[in-house]
Amino acid sequence: MEKYGKGTQAVQGGYRPGNAEPRQVPIVQSTTFKFDNSEYMGQLFDLEQSGYFYTRLANPTNDAVASKIAVLENGTAAMLTSSGQAANFFAIFNIANAGDHIIASNSIYGGTFNLFGVTMKKMGIDFTFIDVNASEEEIQAAFKPNTKAIFGETIANPGLSVFDIEKFAKVAHKNGVPLIVDNTFATPINCRPLDWGADIVTHSTTKYMDGHGVSVGCAIVDAGRFDWMAHADKFPGLTTPDESYHGVTYAEKFGKEGAFITKCTAQLMRDFGCIQSPQNAFYINLGLESLHVRMARHCQNGMQVAQFLADHPAVESVRYPNLEGDPYYALAQKYLPNGSCGVVSFRIAGGREAAEIFMNSLKLIAIETHVADARSCCLHPASTTHRQLSDDELQAAGIYPNLIRVSCGLEDAQDLIADISQALDAALAGVNHAD
Ligand SMILES: *Cc1c(COP(=O)(O)O)cnc(C)c1O
Image (cartoon, rainbow, N blue to C red; front, side, top):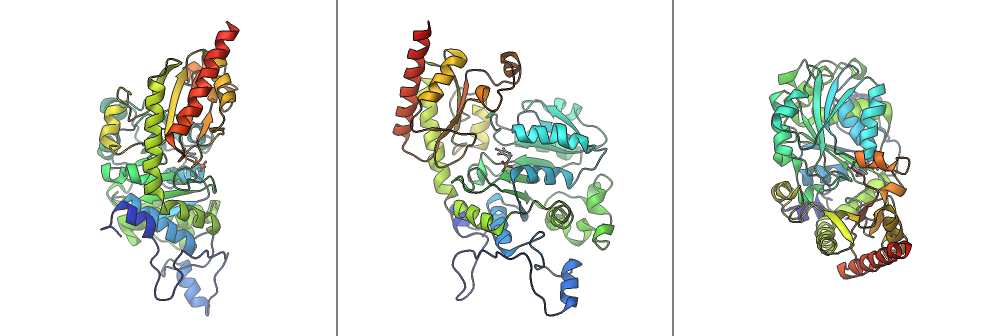
């Protein structure tokens, strides 16, 4: 499918039925697979044959959907996991052990920040969070002898910063480690991090790839370019025999193209589970079939809402990477020339109180802790996801008490704008009343 455009890949990638076979990807809702003899099954266990024996390790529906995502991202291999959290955990834990160190951008999803800084720290993996705008020298200065990867998000959730993939890839490669990029918000339709030098891409497919608020899930994609053998002592898990898997050396047996995902499946999925259900993979595939069409509309709506907010007297400031004047405008022009995503954030005049009135006045846009859905939704972090923080703590975290995040769905832009407009009017009036 490599020669086709992204739209064709989104519709037909990953699954090519043969004569008289089902047109749609079949849901293989089976935990296990049947064999005529034990020898054949033994070969599968030894990774001598490729095939299926137990759905925790691999399943045909999941594989078809993972292959489509691999094609869309220009990778050589991919796998699905049960959620975005599991993918980012696997992507790091596949190459880092207790005693190792990872450099991560400080502008990343809160769940990932906690996974890295709290839970994986307890497992003995140390993280240094650096400014998303760090210079090459500052990135270099964060390196330690035991550093095993750099991690960032193409467009950060919820910070909406744009990650300078080429810059981080350059420093990572100079130090002999891979760059891992969470591409959830941009999707491969708007940016392919692997084409800019990233080595591994992760996705919370729960967001735009599903796009209909139906199933939690995730994908990990490998560019198949990182030369593990050239840095063999840094990555012993890939470059020395795995005694828990019949002595296989992943980087030798599966090469650059297949080592990372094969190890991740054979070891981490075997031991931790976190498998995507085939039914959920099927739903994600339905979302993928229209991803290219939907992303264009999400971006169009996001841009129109951002422009409306930028001109509104009740709005102090707006953040949207493709809006001229945004701090990340130049990086968005480079990495996201066709659009970024449907998420816009803004600070309402009148502080926390105005934000609360605004939220309560929305009629069409729903209050939800979600983004990237066909239906527009909105969040006031200070009174929901970040409510345990004081106003001073919120400020320090860049989550201002008057910050509102809108995820523009697929409705008509004029209806979204009308809803936001009447809620801004109500907020203005409410605050004036209180005065
Ligand atoms: C939502 C999200 C995650 C976590 O994904 P889940 O599917 O909710 O586990 C990870 N990264 C980013 C950028 C996200 O937006």
